[in-house]
Image (cartoon, rainbow, N blue to C red; front, side, top):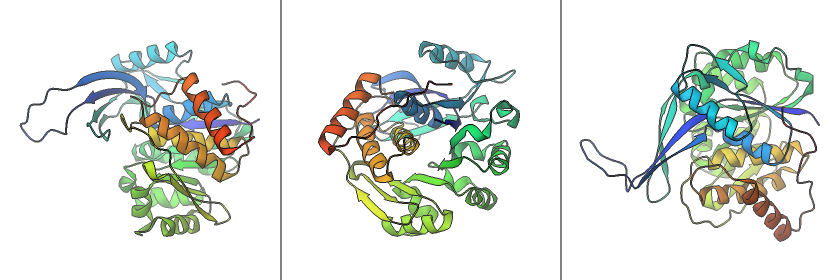
Length: 318
């Protein structure tokens, strides 16, 4: 089995629960404050790890206070930073979570959002099947270097999750990403903005026609709509959940879809399981499912849906 390349950040999430978002000059006592590893690519990569699939997570870590903390938490998971950036610290993300479970992010970017082509010099692109890319990294000054690497290595399929800040990518970013013909993974608001349409199925078809590949559009508790590479649109129901917080739910959904595609599943099966995994993620604090939770969701899904699909990869993790 080939390796999947995951490009992007590993971030310290400071999760602060508040009754509501503060207004100017308001004083609020928080309900709690906790810390966890996060970041779009980290959350997506974790899902592939839970499937025991081969991956290389190219996620840089600085040598300042937050960088050292990131490394410490990674080592507690049996991992180590793939790339070390000297003389630069990591940023962090302040995650404000309201009683509804909705989250608002205040992010400081550091070494974790950078990219350098030299970091992939020892990687054989012929041994890659997919490359996961998040739009947040493309905003950075090194984003053009990442896009150049993708253009120079057209073999693996790009899996692109543009994220909530997709409107900050300029026309050149989008033109270059279109040329990569990526699988698109985004939520309903993002899809409607990018397609300039107001209907989700129309958005799926429009984006499929524009990018030439499969499109997955998440809808929270309502599930997801997907358009296959052949242009077939299908709606898949969500799974009911009591929302604790929505941090990382979209990333974990994307990671599950990517794992399913890597295993050769039909797109609709991968998205259906991703809906179930995302429902479990929003029912807990932070996006980090453990192996017991993952296995429970997977086994329940297979039993309820009558699926007999391969559940795990046979290769280790790079």
